[in-house]
Image 1: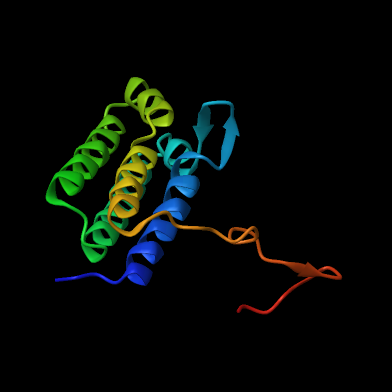
Image 2: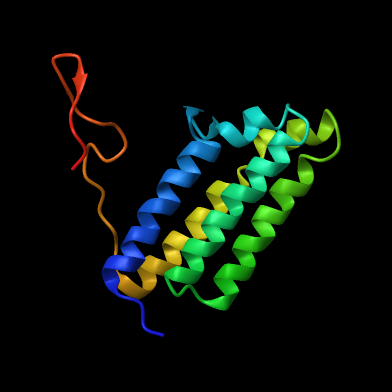
Length: 139
């Protein structure tokens, strides 16, 4: 099944959002923490979030026609990330510092770029515009 360039680039943008939300909400240099790291400290919630975000990434990979080797690499990153949140304290520390979703999203994005060329993001793609203290309507 041939995937359109637009659909593949939409998957690229979705992967960008997921990796920022999961592993880069707050970043200092090369180290970042996102919802995945914060929720790791809440028993069960961290694993549920990790698996859910990972499932979204894998489904985007399938929808974009990613190569099987890319999907396998993504699944391995997500499995490691999710499994690390199970053991208390030490596992939670590892899960907070291991950017599994970021690595899986990067693998998907590289696969998409290799097949469809680079994707571009608008400058304001992550934050809605504000007008006089009110959010602008969705486009």
